[in-house]
Length: 412
Ligand SMILES: Cc1cc2nc3c(=O)[nH]c(=O)nc-3n(C[C@H](O)[C@H](O)[C@H](O)COP(=O)(O)OP(=O)(O)OC[C@H]3O[C@@H](n4cnc5c(N)ncnc54)[C@H](O)[C@@H]3O)c2cc1C
Image (cartoon, rainbow, N blue to C red):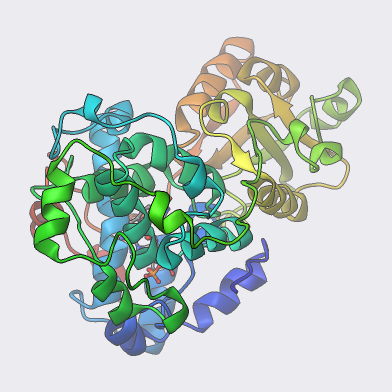
C-alpha cells in the first residue's frame, strides 16, 4: 500500500525513483511502474517543470514520451479550467443520457465498499486507506458508477475529490466527464476482461455485473435503468465505513495547529517580507526567496466550503504546512478579510499561484492594497512546462498539436 509523507524529501525520493521506460511499458497495469507523484504535484511540492527537468536530466525524454504525454493531460485540464472557470463543474455537453437521468446520491454499497464486485470494492478501500488510486482503477470505478449505477458524474467526482490526496478540481472533474462522455465524443466503458488484463488476481470479477461483453455494456450504458446491484452485494464482506469529510481543519484532529490570526502574532509582521504557504504550496517556494522572509501558513475558508476533505488529507496538508512555516505562528484559518487584517503591517506579501486559491488571494491583494497602497503583493508563477495555448481547445489532441515543451526547458 503506498503511503505519502508530506515532506520535500519524500517528494524528491519519489521523483528519484521514476523509471520512464518502465513507466511507458507498464503504466496501465495496477502493479506497473507509475510514479505516484500526484499528491506532491497537487500540493505544490513539485510542479510539472520540476518533474520533467529531473527525469530528463537522468534519461533524456523525447517530447512525445508517454510520461510527457501524461503530464500533458494534467496541463490540458488546467487549460480547460483557465478558459471555462466554474463551467467545469457542469457537463460540458450532453453525454449518453440527459443529466437528469442520473441520480445525485452516491449508493451506500459503493460508499462502504460492499458492492460485492472486487474491482470496485478494492478501489474504494484503497481510496480510503491510502488516498491514492491507480488511474485505471479510477476509470473503472467512475465508469461503473455513471454507466451502470446511473450516478451523476458530479456526485462521484465530488466524493472522490475529498478522499484523494491528489484531489485536483480540474484533473478530477474533467476525468469524470471524460469517462461519462460529457467532455469527449464517447464514454469510457470497461468490463471484467479488461480488469483481468491489468489487475492482480484479487481484483478479478468473474460472474459479476461487469462480466459482460462490450456490446452489452454499451446497451446498459445507453439505458436509463440502473443495474440491479443486489445479486453482487450478496457476495460482499462487511465493507468499510466511509471516512468523514470536514470543510475545515478545525473540525478535524489537526485542529490544535490551526486558529484565527491572533494580535500577538501580528506584531511580529511589521515591516517584514512574508511568503504565504497555502494547501496547494507545501513546497519550499522559489529559490529566489530571501532567507529572512517570514513564512506563514494560511487556509482560507471559502476555498474549502464546497470541497470538504477527509482527515488524511487535512493531516497531509497540516504537517506539510507546519514543516515549512515559522514556529512562532500557528497556521492561520479564516476568511480573506481576517487574513488581510492580520497581514496589514507587512512590507510585502507573496505566494505561489494555484487556481484552487487564486481568486481568494486576488481578493486578499485588493484588500491589502486598500489598507496600504505601498504593500508589495502578488502571486509567483513558475514557467509552464508546456507552451501556453491562448485559444480554448475542446480536445486534448487539438491542444497537444498546438503546444510543445517550452523551449526554455530544452535548450541550455
Ligand atoms: C475518475 C478520475 C479522477 C481523477 N482525479 C484526479 C485528481 O483529482 N487529481 C489528479 O492529479 N489526477 C486525477 N486523475 C488523473 C490520474 O488518474 C492521476 O493523475 C494519476 O493516477 C496519478 O497517479 P501517478 O502520479 O502515479 O500518475 P502517473 O501515471 O505516474 O503520471 C505522472 C503524473 O502525470 C499526470 N497524469 C497522469 N495521468 C493523468 C491523467 N489521466 N490526467 C491528468 N493528469 C495525469 C499526474 O500529474 C501524474 O502525477 C483522475 C483520473 C480519473 C480517471
